[in-house]
Image (cartoon, rainbow, N blue to C red; front, side, top):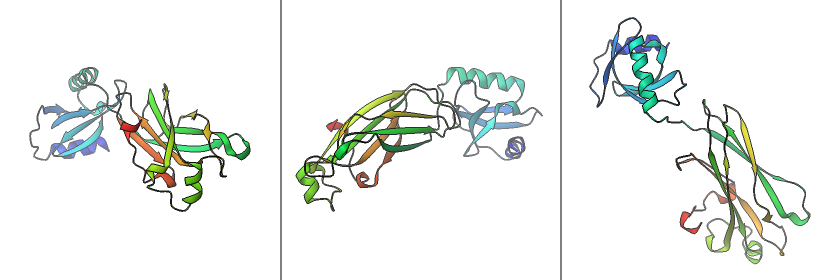
Length: 216
């Protein structure tokens, strides 16, 4: 399918891109394209831009000379990762009055490649005791009545596709009565090794809370 698509594109009129190059496939057909990204030097695919579109193609469709050129480019070009995750949370353990509860955060890698050194940052938001009683039905957007406990852990990996990793939060002062705070929910953020935010999950009651990095 990719070979057929490349051949079809080769019959079109291509506009020149910055740093574009004329590539040949294994049958000598030419295509003007720009190398855009790869997911690691062991990958068998690269992303190219041609005719105003980006597409992922197999390296094996190119001529031997161009395969060597692409492999050299991959060595010299940092890999880019299309991160995709699923995050689940649950309370673990049975603690009387819910005081000192912990939560397990499970991260599943849905990317089609290995991921490593992902930072999991969580915030568990709570209402103060009296505020929790007075505002039980109107908690969203009440930042002045909220506080949170924050934690960070790094998952070294590597995680393959569908692999999971789990961490436990710090103990949370949670209670359903007047004597303790009421847990609203968790916000979980995942950061790539470069520090880029790549995923965020929120419980329903904290979906409108602004994550203020300056307050951390």
